[in-house]
Length: 204
Image: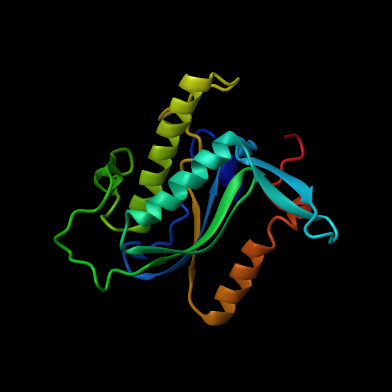
């Protein structure tokens, strides 16, 4: 976890030897660069006269991220979105990779699957978790920069040296029903537990 805050070098969190193009259920977490609360804030809401509860209120950047997030699954027939939550500075999600009914001769959506990080020799395989994440992050950078150009908010633009999201991401392979239910509940309850969240930066 400590490496997540290292702006100069972030070690891979990938499991050694695991094929991330293989079918499976994954718990993934994406965090904004420097954990800045770009995506919105947790506010107290009241529903039908009930007690106030914490809920996520998306910022302009957060709405852009949500749109790109949902469209990423619409354009990929091998990926399915289960539970997810967008928080002030991170996204938690359970995603399902299932290529059993996919024609292997069909090209993967997005250029990210063909990108290579020459410094590490790592190649994102088509229809993999890494190609999905890479494509999503690239589109977010582009769409948010377009928003900055049009609306000129007090925010610097993002590029390959200063990403909107941290270059890496966390993942966990879900192997059984008990683990799935525990993680699903954690995601659902994330806004309720924001005060104690490990990603909550009190300086934001």
